[in-house]
Image 1 (cartoon, rainbow, N blue to C red):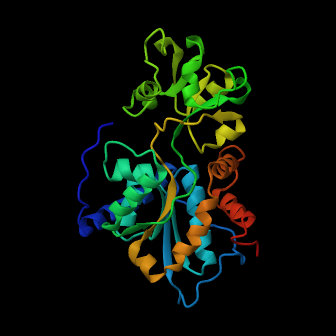
Image 2: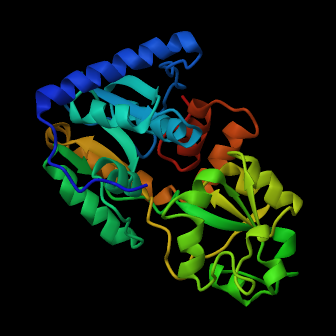
Image 3: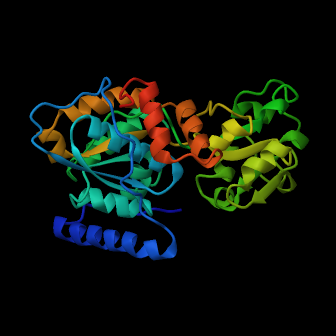
Length: 338
């Protein structure tokens, strides 16, 4: 999609009104079956995260979006803040990226987890993402300071688009390991399963093929007959069944692990960086700088594999996000079972 140039942030009163509208929208959606997250999290025992001295009943509101990965990350934030001694308001499970953004901008929430690419392309309305993780992080970090938001260091996990192959076909396709290797295959092996959106986006399939030296629609590139269009989510099972050799996926989706798919290396760096990072209200962070230290220890452990495993426990095994977050924090020694 084409995006407008970067715009100056809206005035604070307008943002507060927008955030209030977002909260009303969240409550209205409960009648449609989209329940906001309950405040339930398991009780927290001591670990490497210890109570911050002299907090004096300080309050902290944690918010997140309403898909699996964000629910898990949101609960990690809630649990970590509780272990640090904050009185936490759990405002996770908000429908949509923009309402979460407005809550943060309007000082209605103090902590969230955000993706660098989402902030750059959606909130800051830039036309192109930045594939380099560090450069993309610095761009959003610097831009958001004027909005009263401070980004913590990003995690290794990068929930960007990716191209995957069923693992049992890797050897059959010449031990393929990178997207560049696809161009070395015979044309009849260059088959793709993609969602309709990825098929048509200006940063989707067509520019990806061009970036890697394969022309869509040509007999010596990727003929249109080699491309299957699938409903959201069906790409994973279609790729696993062998309907195509290569499927468009999200890099941290739990189905990659459960179906035994192998993610190919984006060796020519086409896809933008979507590393997740904690984002703090700047004033709250100034008042409680220990928060940055706590989350700087958590984020390095949030790898692609870690999130795939946690997402799988929710989406495939049916576990509660709060329990998955709790068990992961315990396994890393950040908290303990009381």
